[in-house]
Image (cartoon, rainbow, N blue to C red; front, side, top):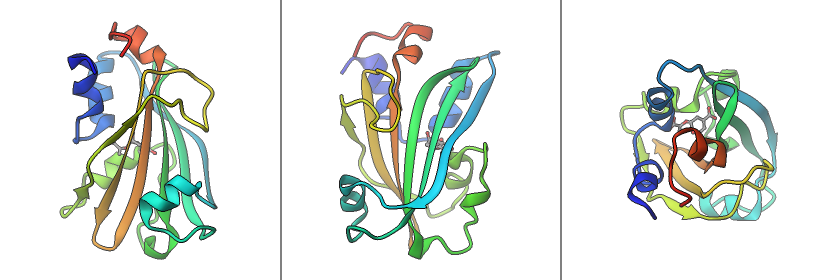
Length: 158
Ligand SMILES: C=C(O[C@@H]1C=C(C(=O)O)C=C[C@H]1O)C(=O)O
């Protein structure tokens, strides 16, 4: 992995904050693609230790700069621990804006992939996923960096 991509893919602080900084004077927006209660994919359920077939909160967004999607993300949270967080009201506020306010937030190690986002038909060099935990709450966050971001920031191919 090139150092330029390592700075993005391996970063453990807020991706939203990094994208806003990289956007400079260009508009940044969280575009809500889908948010519902549904069944996670097998790999998502396994990452969360969730029994197969169990329902979860699913959220898909595109993090866009000047109307161009740079990152698409899909987050999965088991329903049982979703008491009181009211994440269904997030709308187009970043999930990170809530997560990184939690004082005891923990993040698992970050796994990477070259596979494109299964929920969004756009190519990109890297994807990553990690599990955030706050008390009993857990959310799997999967983020896919797109070629549009590489082009706009003149990042290397990988
Ligand atoms: C976890 C973060 O939140 C970002 C925002 C998301 C959302 O609004 O659904 C999902 C994944 C992240 O890219 C972050 O900013 O690091």
